[in-house]
Structures are given as C-alpha cells and as structure tokens.
Length: 211
Image (cartoon, rainbow, N blue to C red; front, side):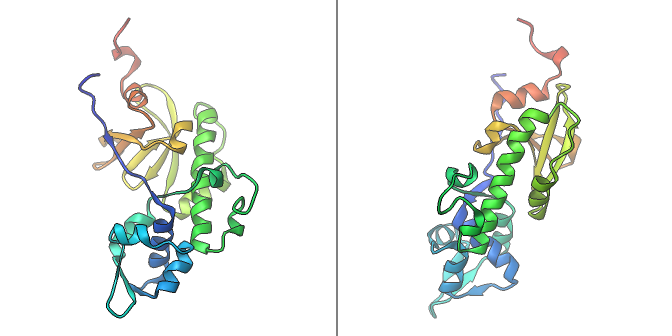
C-alpha cells in the first residue's frame, strides 16, 4: 500500500464565492454592479476577486469569468458548521438568510451532509434513496446511485463532475481522495473520505494481504 497515492481533490469553495458563481450562471450575463454581487453573496466579494471569478473595471462595474463561474457553481459551498447541523438561531433556517443564492448554498450543503449520514446507515440495505435529498443534489448536477465496488461492498456514490464519491459520515467535511476508475467511464475517478477506505474498496477481499 506504500505506493498507493490517491489525488486529493477540491470539491468545496467559500460560500460567498459559490453564491456569486451561481448568480452569474443564472443571470446569463458577464457584467455586474457591486451591489448586485453583494446582494448575491451577502456582502463579501474578496474570495471571488482573489480567485479570479470577477474583476473590477475602471467604470466601477465588475466583469465575471463565466466559464469559471460554471465550474465553481458545480462544486459544493463550504458553509459554517452551524448551518449544516441546523442549529436554531438567526441563521438556523435557509429562509432566514437574506440572499437567495446563499439560501441555496445552505440547502445544498445540508443535502450533502444528510446524504453522507444516510449512506453510512443504509449503503448495504435496499432502502430507497431519500427523494428530498436527491432532488436538491440533482438540481445542482450531482447524481446519486448505488454501486458494488471491487471489494464486494455496496456503496452510495455521489457523482460530482467526473468524481464518483463514496458517501460516508466523513464526507460531510473531508476532501475526497481519488484515483482513476475506468469502470465508470473514461475520465471517471473513484473517491473516498480517506486513503485507507479508498484502498479497501478497490481491492477484492481475496487479494488482500493476510495477517
């Protein structure tokens, strides 16, 4: 296993930047006022500027990199833990957040976390995938399916871009560790929450070292 070195991939971006990216994609244009962008992100433009998602023009407007916006909007928003755990308070409900795009970011982050928790319990059974969770993920291009991997284990996979991510409780916060997995497509990568779990799923039981 010493030579087994998966690639760590980034699937989350700051929530303010994700909200701006979603707004850009939905608007169908590439030039915005400062107030419009602040309205989407609840006031924070720093991450979007630093990552090259937007640039400030001499006339005070902002030009967006539309292709980059499409990419960032296809990833997950990194939201505060209190949002995901649904604690009560001012920000306890997405509806209490004043920016629509940020509301959607919270819904998506919660759906991802709920799927991770659900998969930890139900990956090996025949329980129907939770429709309310899947609908939110599907709305953002994330597909969910059951699969049986080389280990023989049944898993829940969430397909984000070309990453097929094995869902478990650690995927609420971990960055996935991924390797090429052509069984699912020419560019497909299979990912898990840890290097050890990924290796375990890739190696059939009969081929594992015996203690």
